[in-house]
Length: 199
Image (cartoon, rainbow, N blue to C red; front, side, top):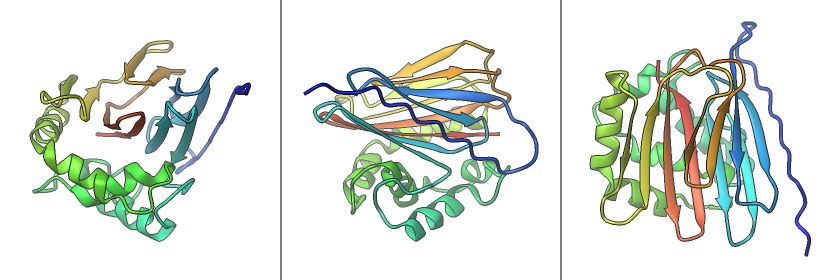
């Protein structure tokens, strides 16, 4: 069966300010799936390389499961309101449950407990990544016991620059003004990514 080109553009504006932009690409489909977003947006991508699907969620908009109110609660717990992404960095413990819910926002998981367990098992990776984000140090961390969780901190970067994690690639369209943190969880052919600003 021929798989068609998927092109998604989401423009979600929190304030009247015109923020710099970024494209999230997902190569789990036969051609290309792309979502455009502003640099202060929280983006979740679910990719299934067996089913050739990519699904996107921006700022917690539900495109799969769990329920929208659960996603909204997780987003508030992690980030508060617009422009308060550093709230995430100031928490005393990594918010495993809330992050798992947000990771599941774009996918079909009705129960994000498997994602939560995978994050818990890689807590050292996430702790190191949060520390790097707090120090504004661009770094990448990977589970050394076989790739299941990867976390990376990326600095602001210029127009046309890009970075990649698994089947995901991000391309700056206007020069990002803020650093971003990305967490990727892999379960065989299924990949979940969440990307958010950290300043």
